[in-house]
Image 1 (cartoon, rainbow, N blue to C red):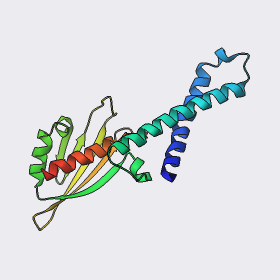
Image 2: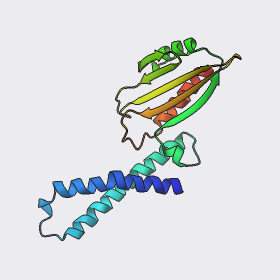
Image 3: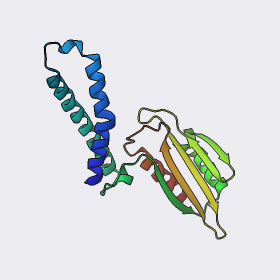
Image 4: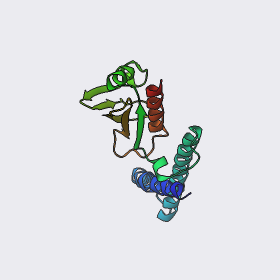
Length: 174
């Protein structure tokens, strides 16, 4: 519950308050004759309603992906996970290029790091994915994958980063 409250406060602070300020500046002439505190109260109520809807949308999106416990990490748009697999880096690069999701992304391979960048879509402004390959002595390799949005100010990804991690896990296990 604490993480949900923090998310709601962050949404009000970075989304709701700027909304109130912009609306008051844009429509200040149309409110002549009405007391300023009444105008402010109306905009704040609208900002709270919008912020509540966004937070509920984020929670529902995560619930639909099977997440039951909500923490600060759950709501973070930056994700990091470590995987182990027996496939080599070359096999992984080949699978990434053939994959319908990762294959559409711009890929750069520099030594033991694979960089992927997705473009802008209706769901996202784009993601940056870094995969660090650590080749071990035994038959398994460690894959450290980090997913973050291209735009630093992104507050919500509605599970997009989790989809990428799930897709990667499917790819290395297949």
